[in-house]
Amino acid sequence: MSETITETPLVSPLLDSREVAAYLKVSEATLSRWRTDKKGPPFLRMGGITRYRLDAVEAWLTSLSADEHS
Image 1 (cartoon, rainbow, N blue to C red):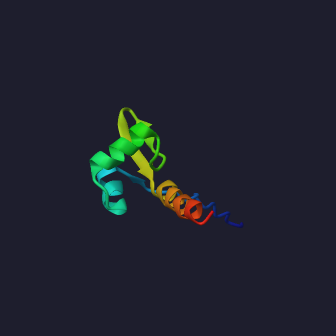
Image 2: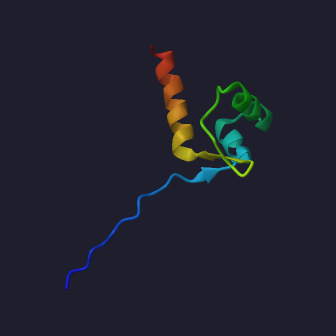
């Protein structure tokens, strides 16, 4: 009998605003302002709670540096 191993795809960890602000070295107020202005990294709302996927934050940072070199 052969075993089938099914790999569960890895999901990027969810970070809260405090963690993302620390990661980006900005204040939580700046991060909040970016959300309001639709300028910052993409975020999720889960029942009124804001969360960020780490891979989305990193992709947003990459896009910023790509824009600088255009």
